[in-house]
Structures are given as structure tokens and as C-alpha cells.
Image (cartoon, rainbow over all chains, first blue to last red; front, side):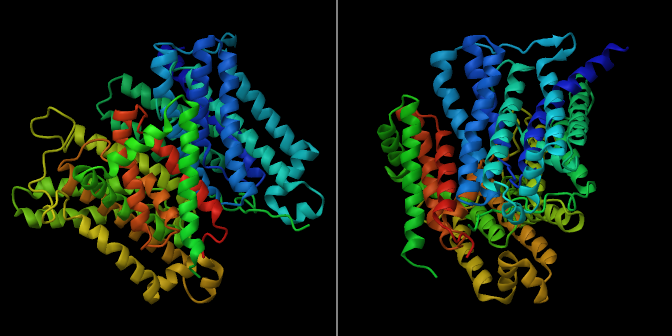
Length: 293
Length: 333
């Protein structure tokens, strides 16, 4: 095959994986009824933690775990305000993104000169030649999410919590517990997604390095109609769009780089405009639930 | 409706956020008390600091009003930052383009109007996507933020770059907004003093305002009353975008005098905190914006004097939002 084409496909996959990981977590969270626009911030926290833990230990596994943990920690903050305090999810998600920008920026500037210096993060290895660990993780995750939601009893309960919280509660489904669990899972996935940015590709942390990938992942969940396989396909499409943009830039296309950089965001808008998503969103998405016992 | 609790809840939110922010700094091995003192001095310590705080209030009031208006009407406009950039871009193009043919006051007036129009169109685009195609305004306004910020970057590297072509910035404005008498703050701040009152009047003293609020309170009931939630949503996004666009135009015409990348240090996002701390009330946006403007202008001093990065201010902002929405149970009364 043409080496340029091979490079394009490889970079498509590498750019698709963070989107897919974050979107898969968000899919589960939204299916349970929790809309989390804070995954952008959770990704950023995951990227920072992966760097802060991966660089000194030299272990990509430790970095990935730290990333997942950081995402989960922020998700628990989000869940406390949104699920327990029934605060508005959009507002809290936006606040979480601001929080993550400030907290990672502060920690990075304070810790970097002292502890990390010029350190670089380790890179995740290929499990089989051509199959990076993060890619394998995403494929396993997509399969597990599909299996869980479509074929298991807790998966059914989780979907019920998102569709008809009142009715599910009346049937004995632990709506709040499921929503907490789904939100924490979504945070862990977003954290892993952020970690993958650092541990597969860039070997360092840059402030604000997620640059809207979490928001694109949100759009992918809608675009994929809340189905894991379609979300995965959507992630590949966006990975391809980004890879194409970088490829064109490298090939010296006579279009200003800043205009090329707009491409993923414009593509998201176009895709959203043509993916009529109204009918498939869980009926009780973003609706707070208070059990009347 | 408005009692002591309406005053105490925001104060409690600010206090709780400050304490938690201090704990965060202590965990990182920094000195929270020193940071707070440096921040206070940097925001209010002398005349220059006070003027700096006042100047930073301008965009926070205008975009804070934009957010308060949208949220109150049940429209999640998270795109204030992008609308501000759209306004700054259009204002610069007009002022620099007209500078040689029109007298300066006319060029400036047209620049402010053009900035408003561009911001309104940027918000209206999200409105059209919502009304016509069912696209959530949360996602569309977030995406449009990135597009507008990149459009400004493109413009100052391309068509709007200064004639000298040395730096990625536009040519200077033919004239800036004049200073207020006796102060070194620009007269655009008069808009920040006037618009909260105008918006309050619009929302609470006119039939159009009642319709907007009705859609925010109960869209279905509003529909039965013959109000089209779609039309009101579109109106809100245009009006909200226009306010944010005006903020961008005032910023380039009054403060920087040129367009460049990163013209806003995130005013559009801080404005969300402003609006929520103000409990979405147009008049309360003024004190709330003053608080965040003090944080922003004191943040630089905090970094210089106490070695605490200025981005820490964002942690406080986020905490204020969390506490504002969780201390008030009836948050959209």
C-alpha cells in the first residue's frame, strides 16, 4: 500500500481512540439519564494525571490508571452536585470544565519545575504489532458496553433509569445508584481517553490539550444514536477527518492552518444538523430524580 | 420572592469557594493567605489596580448579561466566548477598514454596531440550528466557540494582519473609545452601567420580556398561551449573542486598540459564573461581575507576589458556580 495512505490510516486510528473511549463512557452515562458535558474537563484531568504519574514512574500502565482515577474523581464531584444535589447538569458540566482547566494549569505550573522538569511520559506499547494497547482497550470496551446494555439485567435496569426513572424506581430499580455508577464509569473512560492523548502520541502535557475533544465525543454519542457500534464508527470518521486535516497541512496545502483546524468543529456541527437525534435520546436524560419513598 | 436568603446564598457560595480554593493551594504547598492578600492588593490596592478591575468588569458585565438572559429563558448559551470573538473580529474589520475613509467617531460607532451584529449572528446561527434542525444549543455554541477563536487567529495571520506584517495582530484602531473624565478607564464602561438596567426593564417591564421568561419557566404552558418557544429561543440567542459581541467590540475599541489571538482570557466562560452568582438577575450581574473582575485583575499580582499561578482563579470560579447552584434550591424562580 502507498505509505502515505498507511500513515493516514494509522493516524486516523490514533486520533479516533480518545474520542471513542470518551464517547463510550458518555454513552453509558447518558443511557442512565445523566448528561455530562464535563467529560472535556475529565479528559484534561486524565491527561494531566497520566503525565504526572507516568513520567516519574516510566510506566504507561501506571499513567493510564492514574488518568482513569482522575477522571473518576472529577466525576464523583459532578455526580455529587448533579445526582445528589439535583443541580443543573449543563451548568455543573460547564463548571467542571473550568475547574479542570484551572486545577490542571495550577498543578502543572507548580509541579513542573520542581518535580517533573523535562521529563516525558512513557508510550503505551503495541500488544500485537499494529494494535496499540489503547486501541485494544477501546474495542474491548465497546464490546463490553454493548453486551452489558443489550444482554444483561443490570444493563436493562440502567436503561430503564434513563428512560423512565419513576417507573423503574417503582419496579425496584436503584435509579440513583445506577446513575452514580454510570457517571463514575463515564469519568473513568474520559480519564483514560485523556491519558491516551499523552501516552499514545504526544509524550507530554499541554494546558488545555484536549481542545474540545470531549465535546466532540458528546456529539458522537448523539450521532451514533446511543449505540456502541455506531459511536465507534463515528469516532473513526472524526479520526479520519482530523488525520486528513493534519495530512493536508503536512503536505503543504495552500489553506491557512487555522482554517484547517476549524474542520473537526464544523464537521461536528454539520453532522449534528443531519443526525436527527431527538427521538433516540433517553426520555429522562438530564432530568433529576428524587425517589418518593 | 427576594429575601435575605437571596443575598446570603451568593455570599456563602463565595466564602465556601474561597476556603476550598485555599485548601487546594495548601495541598500544592503554596501559601493561601499570602495569595489572598496579594490578590486583594492587586485588585483594590491602589488607583491603577482599581482602574484595572473596572476595565475588566466591562466584558464580564456584558457577557454576564448575555448568559443571564439566555439561562433565564431556558436557553443554554455556552457560546459567549465565541460570540465575543465574533464581535471583536467584525468590529476590528470595520474600524480598521473604515479608518481611512470615515471620521473616527463614525468608524467607532459602526464598529460597535457591527460587533453587536456579528455576535448576534453567531448566536443566531446556534438558534437556527436548534429551531430548524433540533441541534442542542449546548453543543452548537461550544463548537462555534472554537470556530470563532480560530477565525480570529486566521484573520490576524491573514487578511487583517497589520501592514508591517511583523506580529500576528491587526493594525491599530483609528481612535480608541475616549477615557471617562478624570479616570483612565474607557467610556465603553458606560454601556456596562446602562445595559443591566435596560435588560431588567426589558425582562420585567415589557410584554416581550414576559414572553421570554414564560418560555424559560414552562415552555409547554407558554405554547398554550400562544407563544412560540422556537421563535423566542431564536430571539434569545440573537440578543444574547449581540450582548457578547458588543463585549468583544468594546474590548478591542476601548482596551486593546487592536485585534490579536487570545483577545479574551476566557471572559465568556467566567461570565457563566457571573450570571449564576447573580442568580440570573440583570441588576445583580454588576456586583457579581465586580467580584470576578477583582479576581481576574488580582490574579496577576497573585502570580507575581505569591507565586500562585493566575489560572488558579478558574478553580475559584468553578467552585462559585457549583456552590451557587447547590445553595439555591429554586434556582430558576
